[in-house]
Length: 298
Image (tube, rainbow, N blue to C red; front, side, top):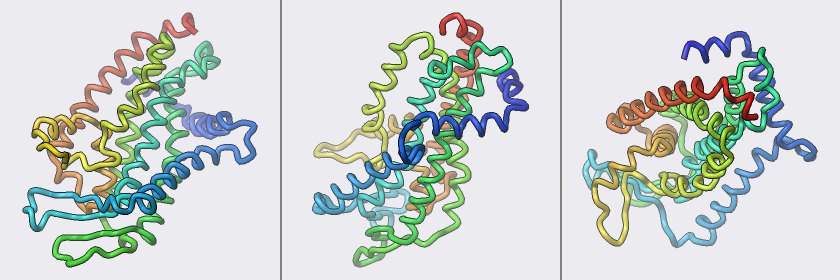
């Protein structure tokens, strides 16, 4: 860990500059350039908005139940698109961070053979580039949630109301969730990037399973309340807590939708922190194990 921190010392400006160049390079030759990194997720959100707010309006709202508040007092309803929108914003960052983070060393192999350039910073500036886009999308989402919003029905209300959601102190929790999300998936790339450089099969496997990971995560449904024609066993609900993507999807909804503090989900927080510690240990181990062999492989 100290070795990786030492490699970053004195490279702060270079990391920020390379992060900006990463976006420019990716969309080189396009008229609107890096704006394509925003257009793609916005088009995806438009498709979901049209599908659920226009085409499938009969699908109804999303019901979220907080059992500790009691069945009568703990049932909330939100418009389906508003619920999904807040889950999609962290997902766009997570998806890009996992896929691009795994590719980062291989597609930037020119830096690996330069002794003066620390390899660990490649994963860092790749993640920072994704963070730029995430912050911009987060700002657009906040404007939509605040001024447009959607259908919301809180306990005690006779009917649902439509409109924006007022800003609150709970929104400040984003300063806890966003840095934690950045750190988690940056550290994950310490393992995936070197391993992908050694094996294109590993990189292709990551790309292939991302669609499955999307549906196994609570991006478009409430992972706290899995429902179906048959009763969902409790062990499955508990197993969902092991998915760190759920932690961030639920966390962003805590900030902007549920108005609940992160420490109210003690079990989920503890499980995530344990996973973070394991990912850090694996990241350090894999990076140190493979770092010196990368120039020969690439």
